[in-house]
View (cartoon, rainbow, N blue to C red):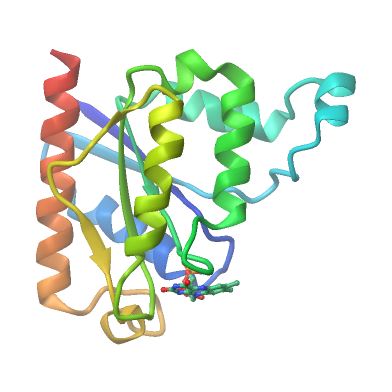
Length: 184
Ligand code: FNR
C-alpha cells in the first residue's frame, strides 16, 4: 500500500483546494491510500511560543501524519501571485518540528485550484524554492493546475467536470508511481 497525505492550504469550508484533495482521495487507484489534512488549529509561528512551550500539539499531530505517509501532496491556493500564508505557516512549523524526518528525501508534489485562468501556476512555482530548501524530492513528472475552479466544482464541492476528474485521476496515479519509485 502506498500512502499519500494531501495537506490543503485553505481553511475555508467551501475551499476548492480541499475539495480537490477530497476528490483525489476518491479517485486514487487501487493500492494507494490518500488521506487529507487541513491546517485548522495551527497558530501562527512564534519563536517565543516555541522556546517556551515547544512544538504545539496540532503541529506534532500533523507531523505524525506526514511521517506515516510515503508521499506528501500540497493542495495550494494562490494568493497575490504567491504562496498562501496559512500553508507556508504550516510548512514552517513542520520544518521546526523535525526538518529532516518530515521533508528530507520525501516525495512532495503540488496541485492547486483557483477561479482564475492560471490555476495556481505562480504559487506552485513559488513553492519550488521552499521545497528545495527543505530537501524534499520534488515531483515534476506532471502538473495539476485547476483553473476556473468555480466552473468545475458544484456548490457541494463535487468535481463535476469530467475532463478535470480525468486529469486529477491521472495526476494522483502518476504521483503515486513516483512515490513508489522513490521507495525502491
Ligand atoms: C486570491 N485569489 C487569487 N487567485 C489567483 O489565481 N491568483 C492570485 O494571485 C490570487 N490572489 C488572491 C489573494 C487573496 C488574499 C485571496 C483571498 C484570494 C483567489 C483565490 O484563488 C480564491 O479565493 C480561491 O478560492 C482560494 O482557494 P480556496 O480557499 O478555494 O481553496
